[in-house]
Image (cartoon, rainbow, N blue to C red; front, top):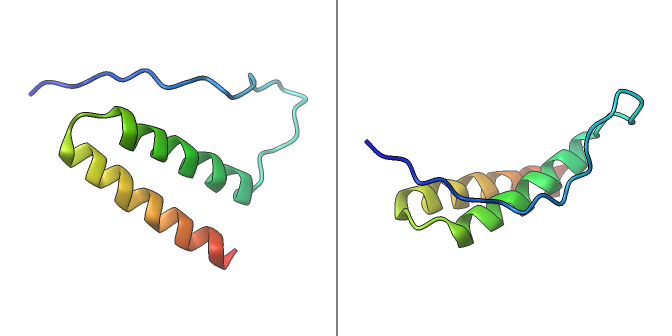
Length: 65
C-alpha cells in the first residue's frame, strides 16, 4: 500500500491558548473548504470520492444548523 501526500494551503491562523473557541458552524465551513481543496489536488479517484461524500454530508449538516 502506498500513500499520496498532498500539500494543502495553510490559510488558518495558529491556535493560541487565549483564542476564542471555534464554533460548530465555522468548523464545518472550514472542513468543507478543505475537502473541496482535497478533491481538486488528490489524484486518487477513491480518495476524491470519499472527500466528496464527506463534503456533501457536511454541506447538508450545515444547511440544517
